[in-house]
Amino acid sequence: MQNRGWGLGTGDWGPGVRRFSQVRIAGWSALSAAGDAAATWDAVVAGRSVLRRDAEIGWCGRVDDPRSAAEVAAATAVAARHGARLGSAAASADATLENLIPQAKPSWPQTHPSWRSALPGLSVATSKGDPWLLEAALAGDLRHFTAAWPGQANAVVAAALGWPMYVNLPTAAACASGLYGLLAVADAIESGRAGLGLAGAVDRSLTPFVVAGFHQLGVLCGSRPPGTGLVEGAGFAPAEGAAAVALGPHGPWRLIAGVRLGDASHETELRDPEVLLTALRGLWSVAPSPDAIVIHGTGTSNGERYEQGGLDAGPWRSIPRIRMKPVIGHTLGASGLVEIVAALHSPHRRLWKLALGFGGHFAAVAVERD
Picture (cartoon, rainbow, N blue to C red):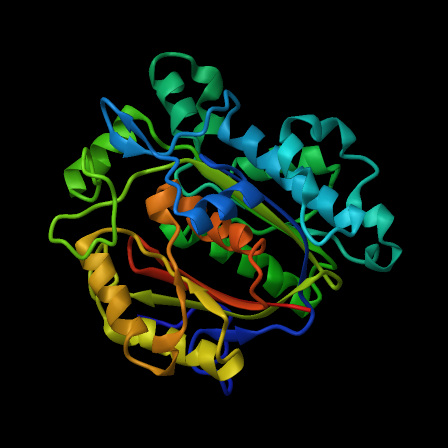
């Protein structure tokens, strides 16, 4: 049984598919265990794993940064906005994330007079909130209790951007959260509810409590380095990361289409092959023959078989596939956005990105460089 997505008509492109004509990516930024977006792409191209082996977790991709999830999201968002203000093809401010928050004003809308008539849209996906703050709250420091829950990062990011008012677009869709946030902001711009927007995602969840849950599910690679996942019992290396994209009517990359679908056939996994095939057919009808597909590539045996089955079953079967998780780890709720932002540094002109989320959430986007 499929959930065809909220607010989406079936149109001529299939269920769950929305085509965009008014949305461009003006600036972007990302942070992974490899570094900024450009460094992340370089590591992926070189096949140079940045994962480390932790005594409690096994292989993982920690980000050495003392800030909270909301603070990291704010810095990443400001860097993406900064790239848009500079008119650069990429957020060159990636390398100096820590230094950008004091430079947040004048606010982005003030530098683009044509966008002043509408509020900005804002979506910062924190699919699990901030588990480190929750651990502190449960240990007795109740100052962090409210800030630990999902959806709390939007206000922190808005303050960093200098946006006293904005269209609030919270999203939570497990590992597809980042792409759901991007598409939520794109919906608002396309429909005229927002004149520009910023979509971000952050995941800093490598706490004992969260890791224990993943161990219980049997999805981590543990002491065995992550691979393609086609070996029974394989798993992924959990990781931390953040990304943001500044969206508006101008920018070097165009958002062509997005897909949001759900699979209700299982409580935790995508199992209905028609969900993935419907999405791939829809993307092919709107943005055929991409130069590459940034796959989800979760690393688990069930997930890999499911995704590979769909990718091998249509005219897209010969398209090169980019797999990032063996290099930077699985950045969980931020993975969809982290990986597409890193791929914006590639030489490719047209890209697809797929994200398969826990609980049957699916999202995909097609983007194209001018």
